[in-house]
Length: 372
Image (cartoon, rainbow, N blue to C red; front, side):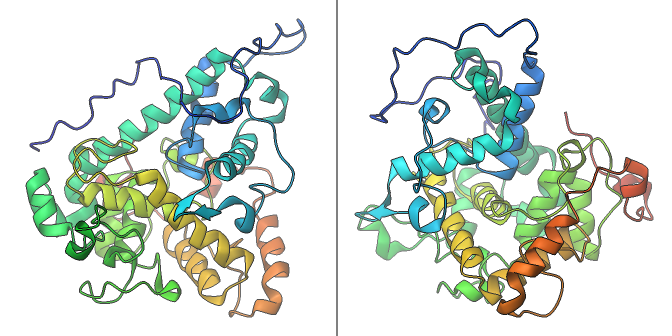
């Protein structure tokens, strides 16, 4: 490949976010723990950072999220998390939403450590290493297996722009206004004709390429190739991210993460950074646009959102139990009950890897890659 894939060295010390976020930067670090209180290892903390990238967001809105206090009624649902002013999401509300996500990832017994600078450094390092591993998989290590024929025009920034700019939302009419890419009017999001740039919520996140990318990110490029060519799942190795982090169904953020990573891989950008180095796309803003659509659909119990989750769970995870999609025909009156029943499937203790394994592929060379 022609591109310099990622110059962000994973062992570099992360820099703190900036901005007026209401955090007291002069507050003392947490007191040393009692002798009886265990402190997690750097590897454990880094794994939480990786898990956050997979299940919640590729980037933090601001590093200050670690030090924020929860504010009741802000960021706890769609109407208070994805609030816009002058067409931009309000940062405070996004931070409150991400803080709730962080508290889902960090075990309760260690949440007292989140204001500690070393804890933050290791968590952010985990996030960075996850993004770096994914960017290499999409742009060099697994490009052909994940993208198939699309990979023929992915060698350089110029090729990707020429072939795929329209696919990810480029609109010359918007270029005159200084923002040439539309997050929602991107054909790659829909199963309709690629020339159709209209946004239709009933068809969003349904395109097969998004699911293929997600399988490639969770289980490795060989698994993505098999899904792309044969529409079937492979045996899930205990050494891939899906197994390491016990991911067994489609969470709210998964289609949004897959969509952003697919768009980035096809874009003219060279490195996976929050703001595109060539396109100037704010990828985190785009992610929030996608996540907002999903949250709204889930909280409104929309039939098309439930259908989308059922399809993702069936095709990506080979399961009929879809926490956000339900298990039967779409009927909004049954949505809450079906969600609770489906979620119960994942509240049970983990089975061993052998019992959870899906049917093995015919070709042993199609077994998933190992993830670090």
